[in-house]
Picture 1 (tube, rainbow, N blue to C red):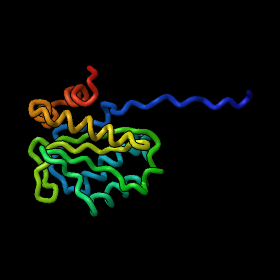
Picture 2: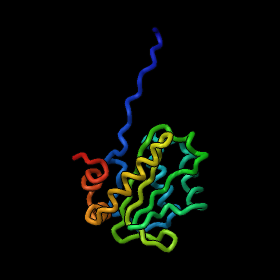
Picture 3: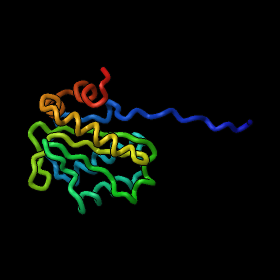
Length: 151
């Protein structure tokens, strides 16, 4: 075959460059747009997905308890997801998320039903209070290790 399609390598779920620690407080929508833009810049999603993440938040809070928010796009935006991935921002001093204090924001894009697996994995990690504290206050390598299990 002359024009053999080059197989695209599978993206990692999380890259160190998509982890921002010790972030300063910012309004919720700005934080959602920032993690969404990180997903777009890394090739996980097309740009309209970022707006879909903001849209989702208007109809359903992505605050999960334990100082965690998991913004992701509305169902209609699934077509904008090119690969499953996450982007992380940590706020050791906390930010206001509709009256709740959030220390860790993880933007999620999942192909098909993969977002449910991603949500489940993150929720399991956050049940461990020590891991949750380390996630909120750790450096990039600590956050990466907790969320990926890799060094």
